[in-house]
Image (tube, rainbow, N blue to C red):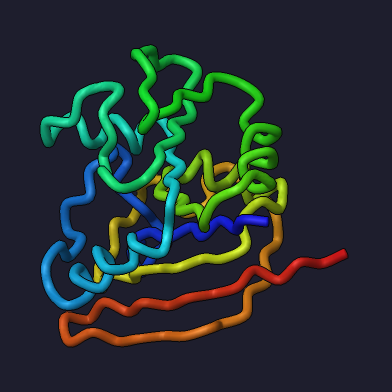
Length: 179
């Protein structure tokens, strides 16, 4: 079975972006950014919600294009509409069942890129095994939460932690499963 790693930047107060979707204030350069780019080699697929996928449009990404060239994309949206390609699949319904089937299919590990609403739904349904946080030394005060909409209790095992010179802390967790 493939596992899902929710690998995302976050503020000290638990937000993945501002209320308007911007990420102004996150540190984009440095050793942590280089390590992040290298980490993408550990995945063969990426999951993202509509808002996360559309975020790339401001940087020239067009609907239907992959944001990460070497990864198979699964974009979850009821409202987006574009011509799908081999690299980018649009999933319009049955998100939970689709992800369950994807996890049981052949392939490598899956990166949950965002956003918070998709992560909240997957977390509520026990579909995320790992959590990798790039904690930035900033506070937004408000915005989109890490697991937006989830009320579920979570229990995590710390696997590793690394502190970068610029103040970013990379923490890797395994999500404990309770039966």
